[in-house]
Amino acid sequence: MNNLELWSRYQKYFYNNNVLGLSIDISRMRFDDKFLDGIKGKMDKAFRDMDELEKGVIANKDENRMVGHYWLRNAVLAPNQQLKDEISSTFKAIKVFATDIHSGKIVAEKKKPFKNILVIGIGGSALGPQFIANALGQPNDKMKPYFFDNTDPDGMDYVLGDIGDALNETLTLVISKSGGTLETRNGMLEAKAAYEKKGLNFSKHAVAVTGKDSKLDKTAKNDGWITIFPMWDWVGGRTSVTSAVGLLPAALCGIDIDGLCDGASACDQATRSKSIMQNPSAILALMWYYGTNGVGSKDMVILPYKDRLSLFTKYLQQLIMESLGKEKDVDGKIVNQGITVYGNKGTTDQHAYIQQLRDGVNNFFVTFIEVLVDRKDKSMDVDAGVTTGDYLSAFFLGTQKALYGNGRESMTLTVKEITPFTIGVMIALYERATGFYASLININAYHQPGVEAGKKAAGTVITLQNKAITHLKANAGKSFSASEIAKTIGEADEVETIYKILLHIGSNSDRGVNITGTSPDSAKFSFIS
Image (cartoon, rainbow, N blue to C red; front, side, top):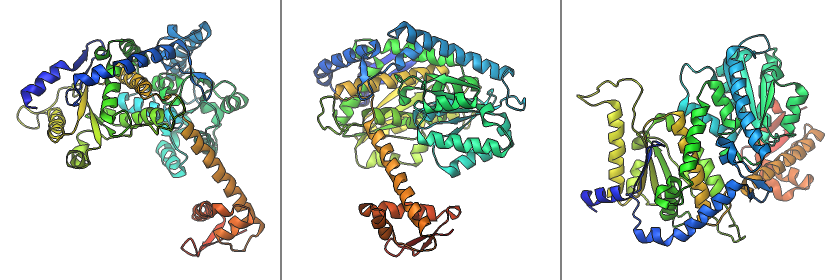
């Protein structure tokens, strides 16, 4: 296809919405009109499924839950008055609490004003707040955010070292729906110990975002934490960013959460259109279906040409892969569905994996994200009449052209600038596209059995660890191979896991386990009392 033919195709399949400040170019996806005509029936069903979802149908049947993240930015749509009131009152409470923190009405234990936030969560309870802070934060924000988003002790030490003596001016938000998420619980215990080490009462610096009557809810009430915000069971972690999970840390930083929710609400409204080519989320979902043959046969590469969007790919990884990566469809048939999502940012990728994207295995399609406004202030010239932002745009256009010229498919999302409204639009756009695509391939986007299986397996490992260590302590000073320990504790088929457990523990000198030998077959373990 020559340039003029491509220009004609660009105009034919160009979507633009001035209200959202969003346009989508799908001209470089090589579908034809027959594809759009042939999938209309599936898309009509996806529209019906989404309507039922928003009305409050039980969508997560594993846990007998509704899925209502769309109600968070328009409480009027919630299926009963109680939910409407809870959503509205929580949104107001978030803003009041942030104002009280900023004004000094609520202060830290030693009357210090809060200047920092430590967010403790994992998955959606951390990725959403991190993405918002990275996309919209400013150097002069009212509070500076930090994150515990893993159960890595060295990572937590790094964050605590960065906070330093300002821990007494740091508000900690512990975010967990169930209150039993082990990574979050571990982070909370590590944070509590850090406060106590500095002679501070953790409870006087702590806020919970959790489900009613959860373990965390009970802990916060019993220990007298500052306050508790709700996390409803009908909001999944990966779609929780417009709940207290994302809005509370954003408001504390001073980010415009009204603008964020307004953008999401406006996109929700636009993506309720039943006209496929006038619905931006439907357009995305159909391009995913075309690009992967509806079976995940190609990867989705997200390339935002804006540093502010560098975490958007990680955010979308969870949203899309946790929602769509399913073994079975809704009829119980094994389908092993999903779309692999990866990416970085432009032009960083010019010097990373663009070489393979252009010349290597053609097992992907690209979504470019273009931001038109370079910066708030005037840009200097780095060459005559050319700015750094011009180069950023040139590298984007050049990469798009180079990939298409070598048979690689792509689409482009364009927004004018990065604002709270725009970020809200992008969040809602991909949430609904994910739901539409799930309907197209007949899977449930709103449960996560694989994640639960991983948690259960981790619990089994800890049980093995306790049994192995108990055996070593009971025979202190004596050395045993992993195989000997496994047989003795009645876990002969778990010898490899026991070896790995003891290798880890023995590598940490404070744990009391000594290792001799350097290979799996020669290693011996003993407990030093």
